[in-house]
Length: 251
Image (tube, rainbow, N blue to C red):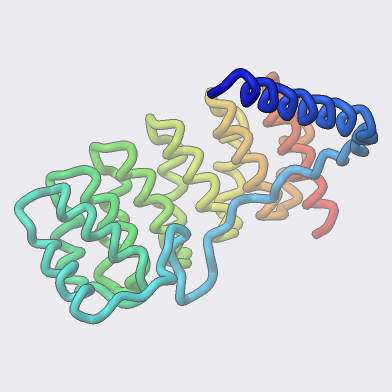
């Protein structure tokens, strides 16, 4: 580049910089946004009631019949990862999976495979699923037990309430929390007293979900325990106790 060319380039850069500063100086300051009010706490998580999408993680999509058949065949693969991912893919599409395959996979030695099999068994509505889901609440793996609790709630069968009440005593706080949520969905009055007891659970998340579940059940027996929960050491529990009491007022 010649000296004259460099001088021209520098002049152009100077003009652009000057224009940028000038434009910046003319910009109107952005007004401060009006604060948005804090929303009320979300209600109790619910299980999807859409028959075409009975699983909250999928069930909406479609695949060609040949692909579904291949995935179903892959459920017999000797590799656990393949079985697991084939199950996961099948939870994402509409359609049915042979219950015989799911019955076998619900007893698979791999924890993740058992979880996915329970998910599809709950969707199947097959009578053979209920004993397997009930047994899985005692599985050695906490994640499988948690999935079994949620799957039992999806059956909408109040016969599972005693099993779910028993899960409130599980050693895993996550399982106990899901048991509270499941009992809230089934709304059986026999769950009121166990859920009141769960307000004293050592885990704050369990206490919090027990409070919300009691609000869902709408039983007057919960009024005094929920009032006491307003003094819980955990803010989430206090908040959800207030939410639950507001729901009792609406009953």
